[in-house]
Image 1 (cartoon, rainbow, N blue to C red):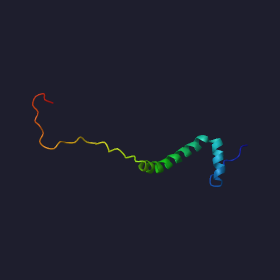
Image 2: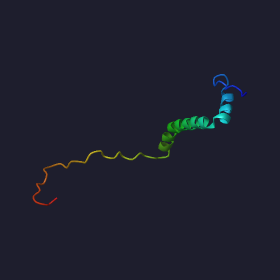
Image 3: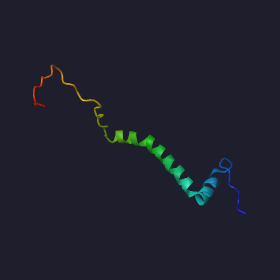
Image 4: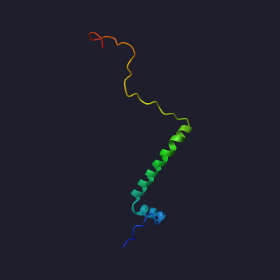
Length: 77
């Protein structure tokens, strides 16, 4: 009979060792998710400090020219 699953809050290091052996996909998924959150908090300030500037946003509408529009006649598109 195998050992019972250790509880996380009773012994976190023991649980992490157990999950690394028994369920590595879960462990690596949690580690990768935590790494992503750390990157989200640290990368933008580092980029700003290195001089990176964000690009201007892409216009979502076409600019309408000022003044009267030229009247078209025939096929002068």
